[in-house]
Image (cartoon, rainbow, N blue to C red; front, side):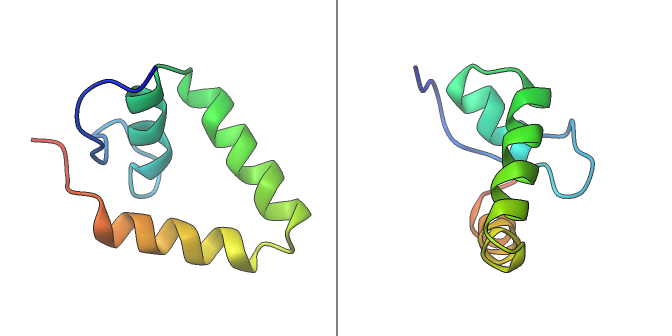
Length: 63
């Protein structure tokens, strides 16, 4: 399922984290973004925001 290195994608709306995860998992970018939004809403948004910011910092940018 997972292929290659986990990097932030250039196909980004904010930081490229969801697009990078989608590419790494081989999933559709829209599904990953929708899943992130749903998980964030159901967890009162704060934990999802923190995880996104941490991944944005930790994940290297795609070259």
